[in-house]
Structure formats: C-alpha cells, structure tokens
Length: 124
Image 1 (cartoon, rainbow, N blue to C red):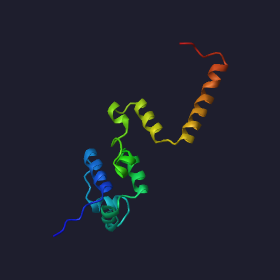
Image 2: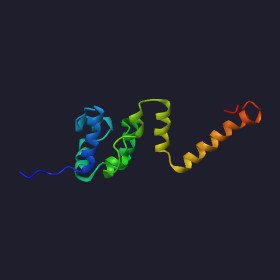
Image 3: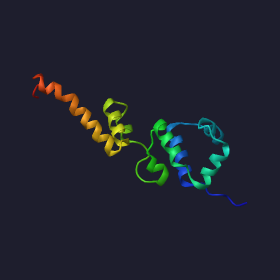
Image 4: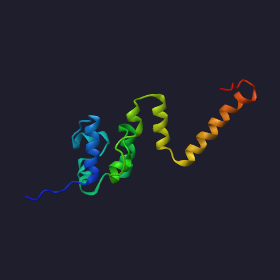
C-alpha cells in the first residue's frame, strides 16, 4: 500500500498544535473551524489555506510564514520574554502593516503633545 505524503503546511500546523498542547483530531479541528472533515483532508494534499492560518495564528500565536512556507521562527519573539505588556506590544507591532504602524505613531505623538505644550513635561 502506497502512503500519501501530507502537505508540509499541514504538518507544520500540527507541529504548532503539538508545541502549544492543542490536542484536536482532524474532525475536532474541522468542527472548531465550522468546516467539513473533507476540508482538513484537502489541506493534507494541497496545504492549509492562508485565511485559515490567519484566523488560527491570532488564537494560537504562531507565525504564518513558518507554517505556510517553513521560513523563520515558529512563534512570535515575545514567547521568549513571557507575557509582559512590552512583549504584547512587540507582538502587536510584528503583526501590523506599515500603514497601521504609521497611524499608531501619529496617535502616540498626538497624545504626547498636550503634555509637552502645557509645561508638565519633565526632562529625564
């Protein structure tokens, strides 16, 4: 009997699940995502669709590029630093596109302006 090779992105998604301690069968994973079991079987042959990876990466906190292409680290860098507020900000920044980062800087600058203009800004 010839064994069918599973798609690398499916295998890497399973690796992420294993590292995260997520114990779901293919059928349970399909139900979690409101999909048919056949969708999971298709992933094994053709790969996990990007829209599914985007949804799961938010919940399971993995890098899409790793699962999709096998490139880079499996998890975001904040994993190494724990769950601190700084780590959460770093993780959010890693996920933002350049336009969103620009808008965030503008908001931050706007929030800092009143403090500086009313003379309450203290030099370090």
